[in-house]
Length: 370
Image 1 (cartoon, helix red, strand yellow):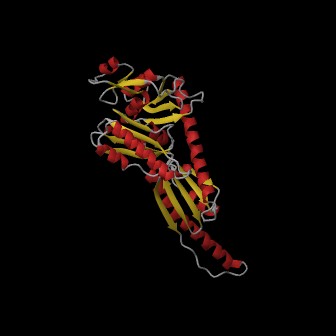
Image 2 (cartoon, one colour):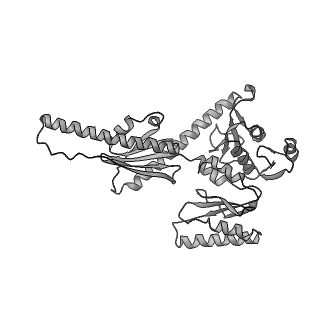
Image 3 (spheres, rainbow, N blue to C red):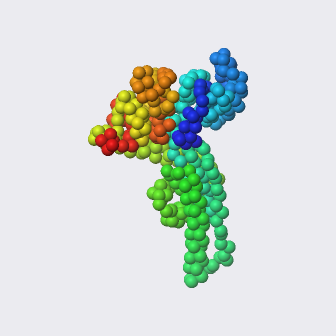
């Protein structure tokens, strides 16, 4: 799933049921505990008067206890249809069962904010296993490239025959690398990879990297480890996760540096609720920036159109809303951001360059440019 896919969720008619259930796999009777949690969810939905067809649809989206730290399910009540069912990394303090005009998408937005599409290449001199990921766990595609091998008679000593053997062998490695490289670039294009991680034989990886075209050559990172089933698979997986985490941290630092520069020049950035709301109304926001201590308790007013939002009912009526309603602040902001094609990033509140109010935005254009 990508951030833009959430627009389809918001396009469904409300009210919505949002269910956010924690999951544990490293405990005794994990599956039984998870099933019990979902039975309690369905009971609470029945007590809240949610129709049976909606409850049945939600029950069918339960998933398994070992698919993530938690499960987020959103259903449209009028359509009795699940519009979102995803494993998420944030486990709620207590399971959430909510019926409201708008869905709570923050848990999945938080994950997507840190999502890094990437390709992992496990190579040796006979081929490679190439995996493309949309995020840290979701495999988009796996391809095994079977290279061609040379069956040459062993040459004694050195001399011209030995050198000819070495030359032909190296040419074969290069041919194998070309097949691997073509697969890597194809999968990288498919997922929009931000990283290409190479693991395995150093010589073969060098040949693969040499022929990568732009922009893929700049996204290459080589990691220690091998291709074979030698017990190092878990170590390689951890190194991949570490590389992805490092990339997320670097991207956050760059985003905040850009934000601080634009804010300092009073150009393409804003800080604080009122300015961000105004920018969202004008579809001016390129990236909505939330800090880890952003306000999760306040409310905002909103209208039928996602761009109709404000701090008071009168403010929303002034921009054309005929039936204003009040909802959770972050939910209303996310609705407006997603509907206007803005990106959303969640950054550490501890950084000096983070929005001081917990809420800011990089803008597509400055008001002075209009």
